[in-house]
Length: 124
Image (tube, rainbow, N blue to C red; front, side):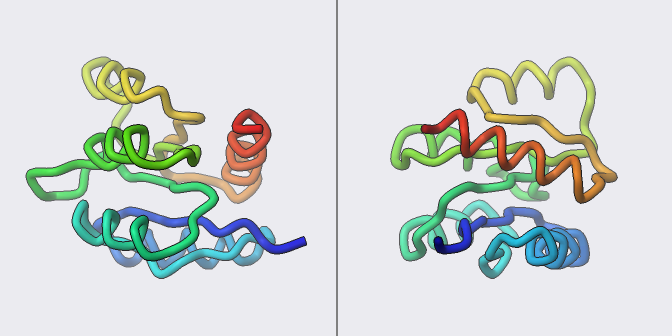
């Protein structure tokens, strides 16, 4: 059985790389992280992606929530938000995209694994 391919979208390269390493240790294949909305769209278009983990704030005009809307419109893959934002407004914006999970930074490997496995299971 092939490893599930996961796209990490986070504008902070240190966090994106750390998450990619964590995913590898958990037995997933982490794709090259996308650091912006545009990079995320390019990766989604050219790569086979089983799941995306999206940071909400991408330090640009377009956010992880915009990426989530694009995924909903164009792809049949689950996505998980991984963010440090816990305010009500951000939560409401995120909920409107119907994510498969919402994880708060800092994350722990087991929490990420559980969210991924539930998301992949719920897709089936």
